[in-house]
Image (tube, rainbow, N blue to C red):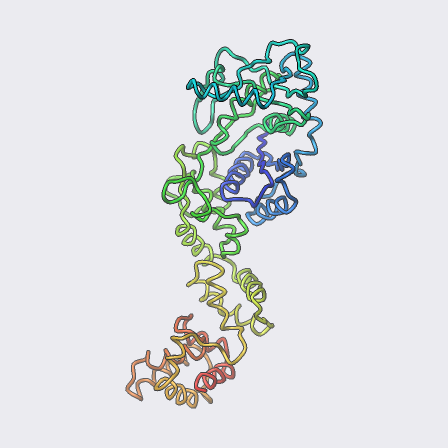
Length: 465
């Protein structure tokens, strides 16, 4: 049997972090077993589904590097087929029309509530003759669900889960306007798409019982279910925006690399021994459902950022330069070929100190900014008073210094400090402030070598002025 998984988001907003993890688990499971990973957009809620949300889902999956097989299925386009399946069940006596009005159903629920009973449909039209139907009422179509026995799911994460059929009511398959419900559409689509394994959040576990009943009445084999625990915030509460539960594009904009996000999401609820850093190749080789725990995972932005720092240090320099240049230009900076060359030369040191691409961009900006370079408050203090005099003498000394290389430059600056009876910091810190605009930067003699003599001396003059 070829494994077939699917990711089936509703396009009512961005691809949130929980959905991204569900997509990743489905993708990894399919790739690990040499199977297929399918994408279905469940756009049956026409009022809330938007083209922008569909594009956001595609973009989020693409950024995460999760490719899907075949063309995406748009669920709404199959609505007539879904409805026909319900009509076939109706003709076979496995479903029935229900003419209960909204007012009747509301009164039924109030009575059940007052009696301390579970609120569910009481089957009042289950065995009535349609000839008793009130005039002018369009019925819904309900599943004639079994009332005796149990429905059992051998869940691959939760274990065996059982519910008494008497606790489940006859769910609606078709609304009064003839449109299919979510529960019907999901079952028909999963069957038609050949889905063998449904991997999703455990908030869908109760749906699985009803869907299993529908599969049985249709004479179809249900897929294997795996309901993974939801993601919680650091405080143990259900993950929400206040915990940082944003769309994938927001994490991209915060400077998170896609490979770091994949690694982090993988470790939210799945483990492989004590391994924390897991490459894509290892993930595909190792991932299986027996590594998924039953306890909710906790999202931690600090851990994600720290992990991202690791992947920044491992990332290709040319790729990081492209990301930095894109951000600088978006922020209104002009980056020419010379500036790009400086970034390329300085990237090995720049990325050692950054945790996000945002950090990296801020730290790298001094390489491309035009003169006079803006100085932050601490840097401005460094180049005033005694610092300005040190810069003057240093500029005169460096004007003809050779060779212009980091090691030789460091030796010469040390010699100047010793000659004037100063600690190296009294010379190096004003120098750093003048050349980079900050008191924090990559090794200053490396920076000077990359900038070159003319640019370095010009920045010293600007700072003194």
